[in-house]
Structures are given as C-alpha cells and as structure tokens.
Image 1 (spheres, rainbow, N blue to C red):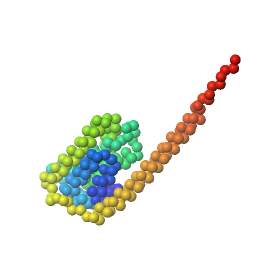
Image 2: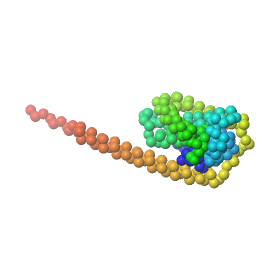
Image 3: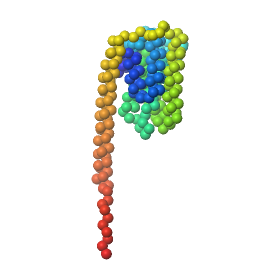
Image 4: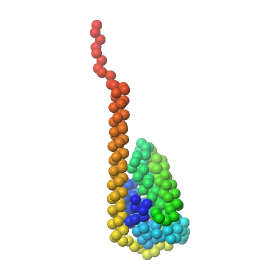
Length: 233
C-alpha cells in the first residue's frame, strides 16, 4: 500500500519488507536499498521519490550513470531479499503472493517512475514483472537451500553496491526526513498488515475446512475395516 500509493516514508516501507521476508539478510539488503534511494533524491519521503521521478523520469533511466546503476542495484537487492520465502513444498501460499506483490511494488517505486496520477505504464509493467520474478526466484530457491543462502548473501552485497554507486554523486548526508511522513507510513503499514493477516487467515481457514471435508468423504467412501472375527470350526 505504501509503495503503490507512494505515501509515507521509505524507512517504514523498509521495515515492512524486512518483516515480510523474515530473515536477517533481508534487513541489511532492504535497508541498504532504501538508504541508497533516499540518499540519491535527498529525501526519505516516498512521495518525494515518486515526485522526483515524475519530473525527471524513471530513476533507472536518469543520469548520472552511477546513480542510475545504483537505483537498479537497489531494486535488485529488494527483489532478491523478498524472493526466497516460498514454502519448501514448492507450493505458492497466500503469504508468498503478498511478499511478491510487495516486492513488485517496492521495486517499481525505487526504479520505475511516478506514482498513481502520473504516467504509470512503465511503473505498472515493472511492478508486475518484478512480482512474477519474485515468485519464480522463490520456487527456484525452495528446493535448493545452498542456492537460497548464496542469493541471500548476494542480496546484501547488491544492496551495498547500490549505496556505493549512489555515493559517487549523492548530495550531503543525511537525506531530509519528516516525522509526519513517518507517522503516515506507519498508519498505512498497520492497515495493510491487518488486511494481509485477515486475508491469509481466511484462506487458511477455508483450506483447513476443505481438507477436513475431503478427509471425511474419503472415510465414508473407504471405511476402515473392522476387527476380524475368528473362524468357527
């Protein structure tokens, strides 16, 4: 919700994404990605990030080259950080879809242009592509624990590379921040979290009820055999 609407603060969005990924490396990777993005535009407000891109163009295509590369690296760090949570069974659960949607929206906010109300065709395409890639990466990593660990470390290195690339042409540190945008982001994050928890809970309850009904039907069709009676001679 924060990334789609570009409301609130990048620090709040980073916390939400790190919580969704639920792994230590994600905290470092996502944190570095949003430090780089905020530093480039000298503001941590998501509205300021989208506003700058609305005026100048998508971050990934606007120079200087090192800054544009830093935005792409930040987007890659977010994607890799959130794309490793698909269940080991290889099935995509509702929480995995929520992570993928969040990853797609965050990647688009960092690298692909203005928010709602502007020319959002590129941003929408990047969001859908990144969400799809997140699911694909998750399915690829699920049965391969070693690959999962390697890509988790790579996400941190890519995030650090984003900061290093931005630093070559960045304004003075730290970027400006406003308490109001942090509070706004926190409220939106709580509302989005409540919606996600409700949706996941409803899906889990429905799946449990469906599995229970299926087990009951199987017992009716194939009842367990009773104890054998001894033969009478």
